[in-house]
View 1 (cartoon, rainbow, N blue to C red):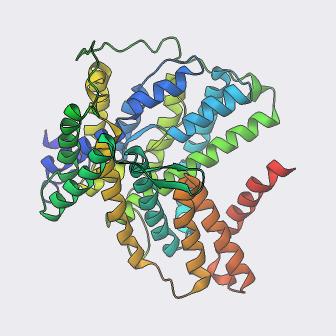
View 2: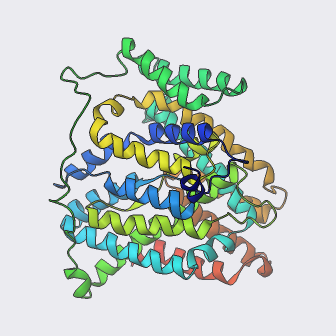
Length: 432
């Protein structure tokens, strides 16, 4: 047992098994919505569901990277896969899967040669902390929206939602979770999710199906496994190559943003150098997960921002990721039970973690406007665009432009010049 824990980076003198397991439970419950959302998205294009890729990728994170991050098919990337590539652009899902597979191989190559790590190290320290703050704002916004505390408005874009059983559960969870955290109760976020799920039953928020069955046998992945079609890649289709680069770009900065943001907020980052321990290993786990995921028949696998909830519960080793992976495996047989957890019950975890991730703002220098503006753009654009990668791209691009035009060339690394060039192409190419 001790040897198994050691393989996951667990040190009994520094870590606690109960804490790591509770962290994994919290992460899983917070991201369990993908068990319902992912099949809906993929079924729209005739694909069956699978969580095998999530299990495999998270196990790689646990044993190879020894980090507390969970991986699964990314929701934004799934939507791009299903609705843009397949429905809008007319590619078959087999051809789209091939694009994901190729992107995964490219990721492995970039990670092996430490290109992704070089990109992280080229990001100015203040911007790295602003990524953490931006992600905090982003996931808090997601939590408030899931709990219907914030709703769409034609006049003001968003507005306060009406008081309903759903919003009462969401708001009650935020208050209860805050009190439990203030009283230093271990597993506060996890217990809050469970308590609000139970409270939601008599309120009608937690739905128990009439034909509820605790056990459900998983469906075979044979119809979608190893069904990649490389015909467009072999035919040197330029549009197809651009699609691969687009997926690569989206996955790259979503993953980097999550790793930087969650690590910074949990003091897992060196405040002097900005380095993240075992970063390259974590990136490799993400890359391998994407590649294997494509072969299993699912879209891009990425590191989930909800991992921050488990990290805030004290998860620091691969044991947290291992717990998530095992719960995903169990969900193959007990998915009806996990699908009962309403979004309103997880609102508290997302909002409270968002609050805690704001701590990184104290490390940002807002006195120098040439650095403050890019940091502000990064923080602002993540929740406003609904995209971690867009926030990072706009923040880095504004950093290069402002520093260059104000004559502060020494603040810009060669890597940032290269990235800025590709960022400009990203926004200009659609106009050509």
